[in-house]
Image 1: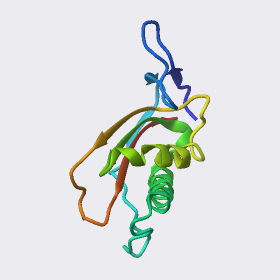
Image 2: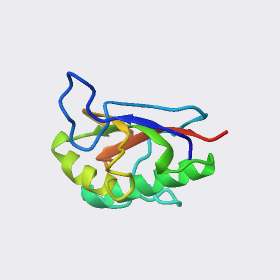
Image 3: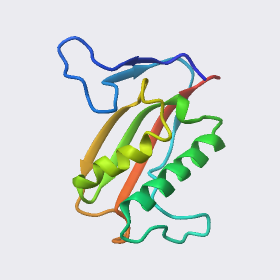
Length: 132
């Protein structure tokens, strides 16, 4: 794991729920594509179920990171795209199973009118910095 520095609450900023305001480090850059709730065969996991979709999305992110030699410990930024922002607490609960909640990545959450398909409720992309 690269030596990441997390800035949870910089001077003048309110503490955020489960994210750092800034994260920095040196190493190899890894970016994942946005992941949705598709299994390895391309089948939707959890139709209409935000928790099941979030679990599949984080599992997919883990696989994408691993393919590039990274892990959730290396993630510096998560970008969430939700068709309904009220799903965010459920997504955060699943996220907390994957990230170090004492040193969480920076994040952005956006409600969008649609994702790549009407069956998708959640899409998440990750940025990571890992050792060279």
